[in-house]
Image (tube, rainbow, N blue to C red; front, side, top):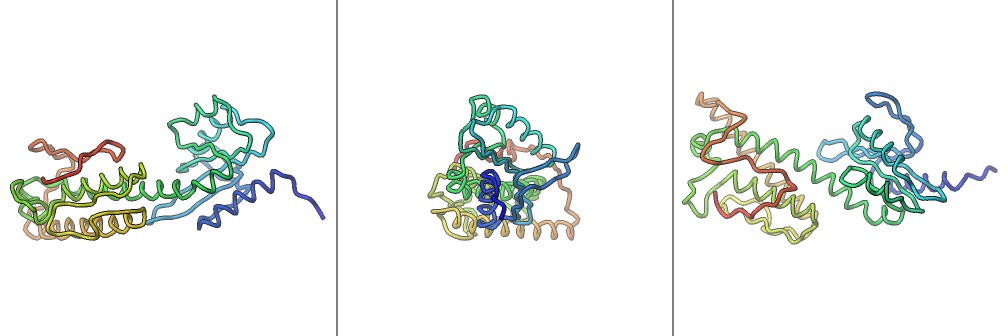
Amino acid sequence: MSIQPDWYHFQETICNHFNSIGARAQTNVTVQGTRTSHDIDIFVKTKFLGQDITWVVEAKKWNHRVNKLHVLALRTIVSDIGADKGFIISEKGFQLGAVEAASDSNILLTTLSDLKSQTKHYIQDEILKTYQKRLILLENRYWSHSKKIRKQYGLRGEIWDFPVNFSGHNLLQTAHWAINSAVKNDYPIDLETYMIEKQGEHTANNFQELTNWLNLNLNYMDEKILTAEMQMIKDKNFNPDLYPREDNELPIKNMFTHFEKPNDE
């Protein structure tokens, strides 16, 4: 009976953890990148809202700390195969150069125990990114139509209307506000849109409640825009501009920018 080395058990324990949270993880995988192939300790894949999420994990069962070169090597692999995130898991810690190399990147340096306690937050971050991508697509569609057209087809009201029946601007801004707050784990999140047409609760006390609200409201926004655009086509009024800049109205900024809570359009 063969006895497996410590590094093997360490690697398998990490792989089993990812499988236990619903991902698909494999050990000792060779993955073809854009420039070359790479041997990966643990390759993790999962899917959310139709989006593939890929993580590359390096298991370092060493008697010394991980150095900068190993972090830079993993950054190269993650970039070459188009992975969303890379992990280096070490029980002996990391040199200062390694920590600096991982700073402001998609490489996370952690221990096995910390990984187990923090994985749900990593997954939530990836899920929020899929909502952000969907929100940006809706945002581009909404702002591609002139203010006159948006008013005519019920995508916004007059600025003096309060409460407004429906305001795409308010809904988009509230969704961005909500995602930005969730990234910072800043619950409860105020989801008041100041509209007559409301979907879901007015407050999210946790991640599950937030995703329920995002699903309801992004679906509703998609339906509103689609219905309006179908009518525009029938009326021969469909003339979207991908870069509208009128009356100082600007598309809402990146999710990591500070947002003021909307109160009206």
